[in-house]
Image 1 (tube, rainbow, N blue to C red):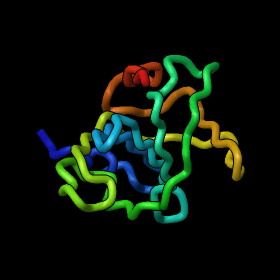
Image 2 (cartoon, one colour; image 1 turned 180 degrees about the vertical axis):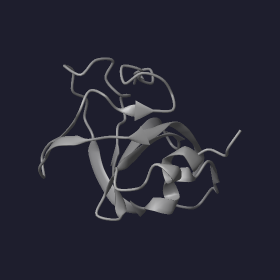
Image 3 (cartoon, rainbow, N blue to C red; image 1 turned 30 degrees about the vertical axis):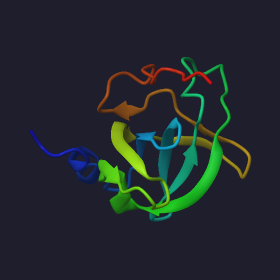
Image 4 (cartoon, rainbow, N blue to C red; image 1 turned 180 degrees about the horizontal axis):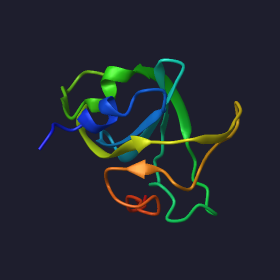
Length: 126
């Protein structure tokens, strides 16, 4: 079985990729990252990703990440920014149908390694 991230790198030929990392830092949250202009544009979603496309959850824009970060899984050591466990929850390709400073929408047919585009991590509480 190829290592995590290999499928995204193989599909990179002109089709933008995404990765969703589950991040167990001070609080559990998800970090969706969308490839654009040679980097991953990134957000933190503290309440979990919505179960359906009609629901919105707060997504806080965070710093861009290099594309190499999309295959990272492991522990960020205590004392470093983002300290905690990072796991790849999903990865694949996407098509942006709208991209502005305030809103990004993607096509419903994401190509994903985790399952159908309707699969989402559970919402967190608290």
